[in-house]
Amino acid sequence: MRFPLSMTAGMASYIARNKFRPNPEWQKTVVTAPDASNPFRIVYTHTGADRKPHPMINKRFPLVLMLEPLHTCNLTCTGCGRIREYESTITQKLSLQQCLDAVHECGAPIVSICGGEPMLYPELGPLTAKLIEENKTIYLCTNGMFIQKRLKEFKPADKFFFNVHLDGMEKNHDIAVEREGVFREAIQGVKAAKQAGFRVCTNTTVYKETDMNEIEEMFEYLAQFKVDGHTISPAYGYSSVNDREIFMTRDDIHEKFKTIDKLADRFPLFSTPTYLEFLQGKRDYPCTAWGNPTYNVKGWKGPCYLITDGHYKTFEELMNKTQWENYGAGNDPRCDHCMVHCGFEPSAALGINSKLGDTFKLMTWAFR
Image 1 (spheres, rainbow, N blue to C red):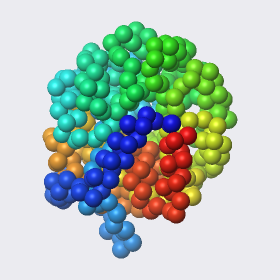
Image 2 (image 1 turned 30 degrees about the horizontal axis):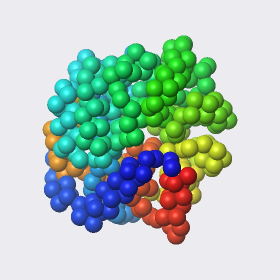
Image 3 (image 1 turned 90 degrees about the vertical axis):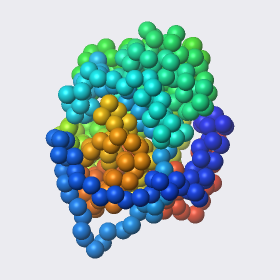
Image 4 (image 1 turned 120 degrees about the horizontal axis):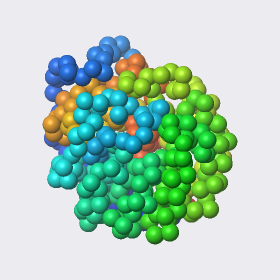
């Protein structure tokens, strides 16, 4: 199986339960003034008659919590906006209790611990142990450089993954993270984690200059270490790193991912086949950003992981005060070329705009 049976069954049950009985406290719409203190905010409201209502707008619930205990990092990756957007709070971090409170408040079955570099968070060991105890699925997103040093602080579990970011083979990955030797250290971390019995997956961001043949080469290379799976997603030029030279339009993405089926047939991709069809331009999805809410030192980040128009004190405020209908391709120009998994994989998982045979396709994918 691609995922542990308990994880697959638990997620399916969670989705079904919330689709039929979504929390009514998350479905309200409260109009508020934009956050004037946010230097990256852009106020834009779509007023065209062609606006299509989101099929899940009144059934909002989270699938994956993007938990950022801190934004401190040992790298300055070209495509990362966190160390730039949160420069004023770069030394701050959440307490262990704040992290746990956010997990409980949101209730998402999956927690992606990211940052910054989460392996720099002093209480990461106790945090993951508590989440495992609470039967959460954990993706610990890391550049891999500190895995060997801190490995003894963690215990293997079916629902705990080290998610190591790799954007290509050694030369190009080290260029992307702006430091030599990072690829080698990450691979040593992957090997150490697998030898210790941990589940390990990788996360790859595809840029305009990415050679997909190199990504295939990287997956072949990682197969020898018995890596459990791979997530892949196109890069997106959000406000704090909006350099169009490295980011793609939707047409660019369709072209870049036109042969992704070849990789999906050979390697255990964690990206669903329906999301990959979206990247190929074979189907369309509305963005379901509330499915992957982000919590960090400033609070609940809205509207999404990539765009910041405000921070909210509570998850309920994020769900109700964010003007969701103003976002997405055709509604906000910042969203027009975004096809990133954090906004669209939830739409695929929820079966929005489903086609005949999707259920069989997803079951086949999950049980391979």
